[in-house]
Length: 191
Image (cartoon, rainbow, N blue to C red; front, side, top):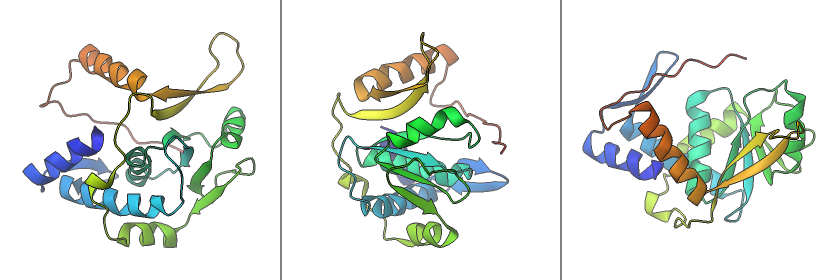
């Protein structure tokens, strides 16, 4: 759904600002092109549909490209923002791939790919994959991996399926009164 939204706006209003981060503005056209390029790079990891990958990246724009690219490939994703939280380490061990900045402690990861400046530049320079090449959406596809302690107090991993995630997003949209004219401002992440 997200990629269709981005592609629609890239076609209808290519020069409109999609994301602003640290004073840098990214248009829908650039976001769409960069998403296609990063998806091409992610495809090379050979993750099958339904696999799970964690992303540890402080650059919000590139982190979104990775998460959306994984979604396009049918790979569930977890966003790991708190590098110092030891309770996230067991989550890393359960992932099929961890893509993170070199400073991220990924010792427990089964498979790790560091985000170096050279890899980032290479990923963004790839020929963009057409959004039509994305994996068809199925209700039982895993979408996101979240961590929760639930009622036990012990951190555990939960995969949200598309059929669970889409209604949750609809409720969030309704609750906050979001419309197609709404703009969202997020605060910066701190290390």
